[in-house]
Image 1 (cartoon, rainbow, N blue to C red):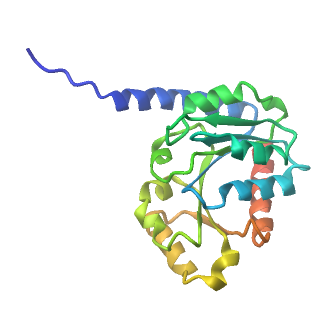
Image 2: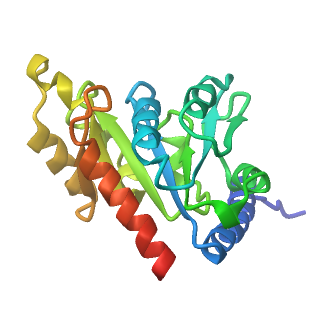
Length: 223
């Protein structure tokens, strides 16, 4: 009798991609932008979102979906800066969000009154790379405390991202970190990456980042 092999991962990914396509259709129907923010733990991703909501919350209708392994601490932090829905997805140990979770989260969001959805993924540069959530683009956040070669160590994530935020640049005077080398490593993996350099703590570079987001949302509305 022959042996039949069933690739469970392949079937799971196929279902995820079907759900992601539906999420994308729903967002496009309402002309809502969605950015999937991915990073390793400690990159400053949540603080970056806090400062972004502070600056843009009065001008854009922004909803947030946060993913965390055990707590909803990040969601609680972000909820202080927006009166729109901040939805926590506690994965219970899973190292990434999936399209089913995003589809469920969208059910609680009034997309007709939303301009932008930020998805704050679980802190991990490996697992989330291969999972389509229906987002318009992945934004990879890494910091000057992580080493210039981070992009070549985790090429999958940087290859799939369209934008990269180099965060915590206020620490550059105190670190042996070469910004140009870090950007070169990233572009070695993905020559099309658009870079932003920020300090969510001091506000440096935040204006450029927020101007980009606002313009992106405006373009989506008139498209």
